[in-house]
Length: 198
Image 1 (tube, rainbow, N blue to C red):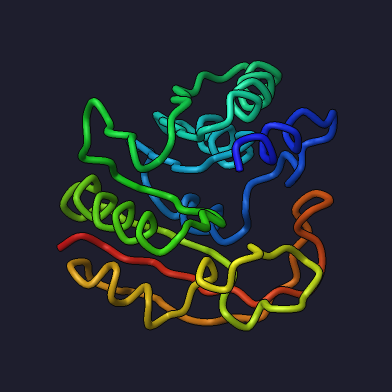
Image 2: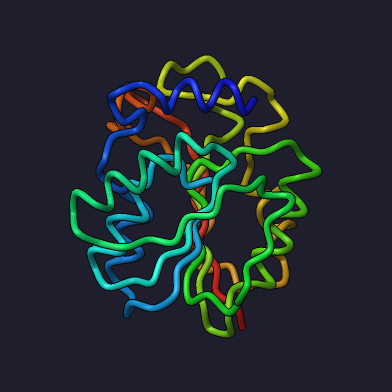
């Protein structure tokens, strides 16, 4: 998997564009800037947007090529992001208590997904938020992007269980149109979550 992602991120173009995910952006724009964690951030489109708007950003990905592209994007906007190159199952932040954690198309095998989501619920501070958008089970066969393994696609029921210790403010399956670079383009079936730590 690492070779696949490194090769994708070596391409000159940004695989998913340089603009933030719209669902994540809509939530971020409503909040007072604070500390933000972005696991599996890829080439930095969400991290750089957040940093441009005053957030203190920590991004994580296992691809060094993703980190390189993200830092180039940050430099082009004159902002700073902290970027850790590490597998998500091994990552542990030096400081937790994040005001916001964004999981944008962070598709993982079931065991790793459950572990990460459990940790995320612990890393977010009291009254902090978790925002997630991912492909749903209904995405099968659509050309706008999709993890190959069926078990890597998400459902509202699955996420409600994963984040049961948080207050679920919004959790819905939605059909949207993606325009995120060459690999996320067209009609898509997604699940979207906004949760808050009580």
